[in-house]
Length: 179
Image (cartoon, rainbow, N blue to C red; front, side, top):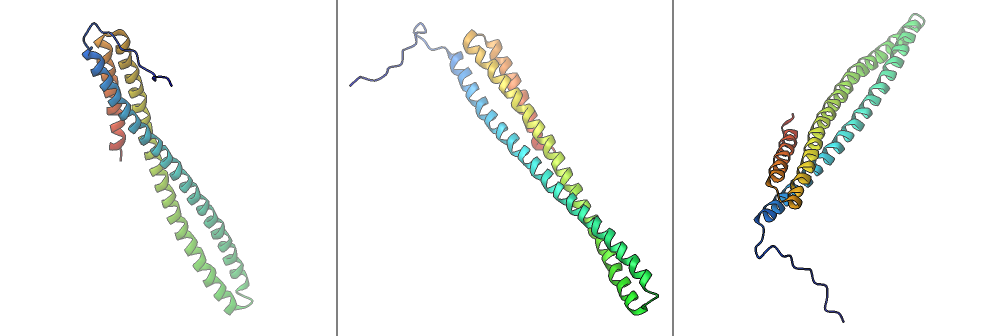
C-alpha cells in the first residue's frame, strides 16, 4: 500500500509571514459573521412572507364579512317590506337581521385592524431583511478585498477589507434596531 498523500511544505525563507496569519484569522471571523447575517436575512425574509400570507388571509376574511354584511342589509330591507303584512314576524326578522348587521360591521372593523397590523409587521420585516441583505453584501466584498491581501502581501487591502466588513456589520446591526 502507498504511504499516503503528503502536502508540500511552503518555503518562506525560514520564517512565517505574520500578515498571512492575521489576514487568515480576519477572513475566518468575517466568514462566521457573514454566515450569521445571511441566516438572519433568510429568516427575516421568511417572516415577511409569512406575515404577507396572514395579511392576505385576513383581507379575505374581511371581504367575506363584507359580503355577509351586504346580505344581512338585504334581508333586513326585505323584512321591513314584509313587516306591514305580518307585523309580528316582520319585527322579529328586523331585529334578527339588525343584530347581524351590527355583528358583521364590528367584526369587519376588527378584521381590518388585524390585517393592517399584519401588513405593518410585514413591512417592518422587509426593512429588517433589507438591512441584513445590505450587511451581507458589504461583508462579502470585505472578504474578497481581505483575500487580495494574501495574493499581494499589501496591508492596504487588509485594512480596506476590514473597513468594508465593519460597514457591513454596522448595516446588519441596524436590522436589529428597527422597531
